[in-house]
Image 1 (cartoon, one colour):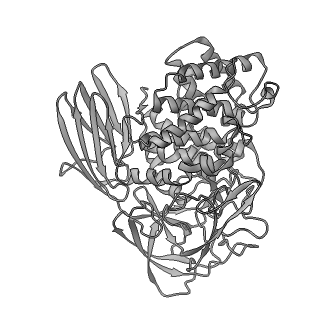
Image 2 (cartoon, rainbow, N blue to C red):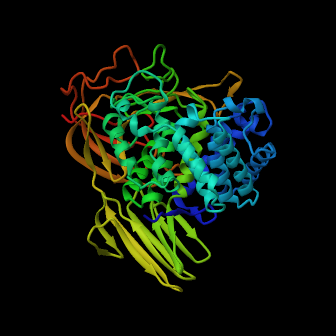
Image 3 (cartoon, rainbow, N blue to C red):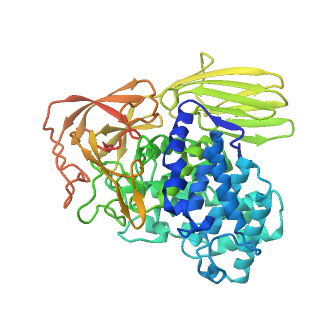
Length: 608
């Protein structure tokens, strides 16, 4: 099984709506956390007295590729400032995390795994020649401490052992020393074996555990993809088996698994943590790279075009900790929240609702998605290039270039311009499984899972592809249904007004634009589908690609109101299932918005 490898931020550049999405991110919370948030601004990682564990590495993991993809010199300089400070505190032994020597045995080494991943990202973007040696010493020290029994994996490091394999892969290609193989073995032996825990996922409990924590599980999906080579194990596609169990017992309409914070079953009024969205996307990126199996790319699209934008405000200054499929209000719970193990503010949009991990970690999702647009396999006389996610991008190396002009997923037309300067390029273009009436250069083709184009040295080709997507219903639990067209899921949007909160809590200031908001509903939400007729309407893409006010595509559906009711003991949560399916209104034509555009929404509804 030959792997696909990622291009760097110097080779891939986002274009069109994707570039605009990254610009919004850079202009907002992601691009300014080091100025406004104490846990990054004053972190112990750079000599301060604030948090010195996961938050700065989490932030840098997205901030660095974002800076380089946009070629933003100010952001690049700020990233270097952080990396320089982190490196300057590395101990002679190689230990790099900000804690005293005597604290190392009790310091959760998840931070070692995470900062090692960040150093790889920084090298791939900057080509800073200090990094290989810095990372070598970090990981050699990690091995020596584990091998000697001075430290062991526990808590988060135990649950996320496979994250260290990003650095192991990087070092293996440069050093290939035996201790790296031994480190891989130790991590696997001490790490959590999720294949033995699937019984815990089938009946979620109102109980916090590492084994059912949604972010751990989102990360876990890639464990075999990143580790099997270095452990000398055969690849078994364990991720498919494990994700199928998670989907069956905890799935959502947009490809997530409920987890607020731990697995929460199949209810449309349970949430999913934003960190899990980012990490599940990252897992799918590595699963495709390891296997070339198109199912992972298609599932990645589903998350990126729905779950990711849905849980972040249009201007990207605020985000939720958890999102719900049927989310009729984002108002602070006056008493016990609906969530399993989250607090009363977890679904509010804000700076750090419930907990600050997502504030730092959501930053990686869009930049790493952009870097997954194209992947390659290298050969002696040329490369095979795969258009994995057909989003507007330019790929340019010393030997060839590929430019893709498209507004996908809002439209289904694509124009590739591919040119080989030196050697040949085999270009593979993935065709989604839901595509219909596929045309290549104005000729209908028999639908397969990809189009293959060979470009010889000195040759330039233009490839135009079009296909149709048909709106359709799909079944959800509890005799409810959702609607999709291609990779876009659609929801009934609920109009709302925002109530802003500026305040300080635990030394953290919320001040516009990095403040908190309640979203208070203003329109009816108690609808059911009254017809199977759906009409797709394409519009212009605004300056905000996933705009809640001006969505680029909508569906028109015929609907009637029903006596849905509220969940017991709650005044701002719809009932899990309707009280009655008997209509109480005349039929109306309702415009459905993409799930990612509808911040308040109903996504799982009955057909009557």
